Image (cartoon, rainbow, N blue to C red):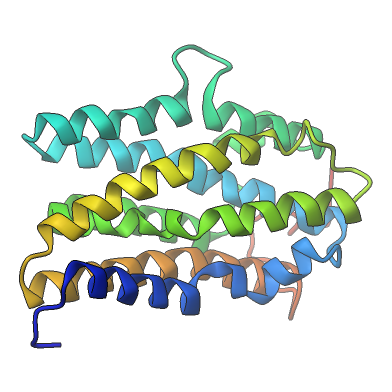
Amino acid sequence: MTVLMSADELEAALRDLGAARYHNRHPFHQLLHGGRLNRRQVQAWALNRYCYQAYIPIKDATLIARTDDTDLRRLWRQRLVDHDGNQPGEGGIARWLSLTDGLGLDRGTVIGMRQALPATRFAVQAYVDFVRERSLLEAVASSLTELFSPGIITERISGMLAHYDFITPTTLAYFNARLDQAPRDADFALDYVRQHACTPDQQRAVIAALGFKCDVLWAQLDALHHAYVDPGLIPPGAFGHDGVWP
């Protein structure tokens, strides 16, 4: 790409990429939402996904620390409140722990992350490193997977409630909050990218940043599928490797 796109053309390219590569297309999610996983496999998904949830505010704090743009810091810090809350027991991380509690997982084990898959830990750390090391514009653009999350959240809520008798609306409270938060965050990030990607190189970079984030999400599901579905090779030290399940 050597020709400067209009802001609308750039947005269309980003949306096309997300439609093709967002992780709602992954076979593991098809199994999860279609009720074709057992309780142990759903537990493994929730335990590993906690790592991603726990690192999101670290990623956001990293982005905030990099910018001298007061408006950007002010607006982006709402994401920290969304995930961490204003006091203990509030926020997205607390709601995710309610999900893992409801699935019968030991809270200390979940928070410790020692039983998460190695690939999960590597993927979430790679995301934080990307936000720390790449341009601020690329860091903002990497969050644009939120453009596509309301669809997968709606599918997840309806599918899991319909197919798993161990899932309740209370268990899935995390996702209800994200139905409002994610579009708000995505709108801001998209507007920022549309305004600040002013050269062909910058436009290539933001498209690649979104592609990288899609890869981060996809890699986590690849690892879950390999360990807990097919061929079912659970790495030493990971959840369920010893054959003991909660």
